[in-house]
Length: 153
Image 1 (cartoon, rainbow, N blue to C red):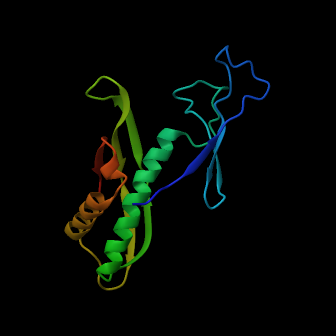
Image 2 (cartoon, rainbow, N blue to C red):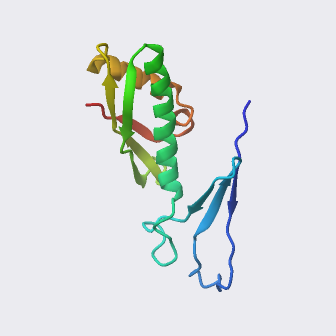
Image 3 (cartoon, one colour):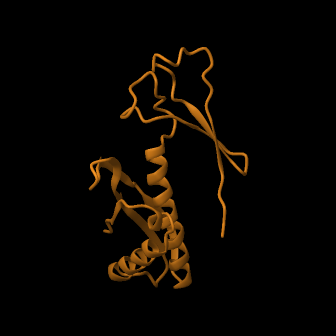
């Protein structure tokens, strides 16, 4: 068993709070000391109560899934002896009502783009297989109910 921790901190400051006009800006702090400014999404809570420059939980979920998928993919590519130079994924999460009628991230589209070096490079079919394997192993994907769609070119 592994345990992961994040410290989430918010302070009211001089805001009234009971008028529901308070700032949703807060901090995420992780074990290595990294602090990440966070907020609700401006799509959920209008400005100025949200801070659009900060990460929001919805973006963090999409990034966590995409990052987990990528890390497994990198490992599998290396195990096969391919030299991967670059990996980029403009991942997109879709919020909609789920089967129970509750608002949820219902779909996440991963769009990985890779660049390889060397005479030996995986063809499209092998890349699809490696991405499928990465998705099957990704513990974030195994933890959520959202449909994950991997769009490979």
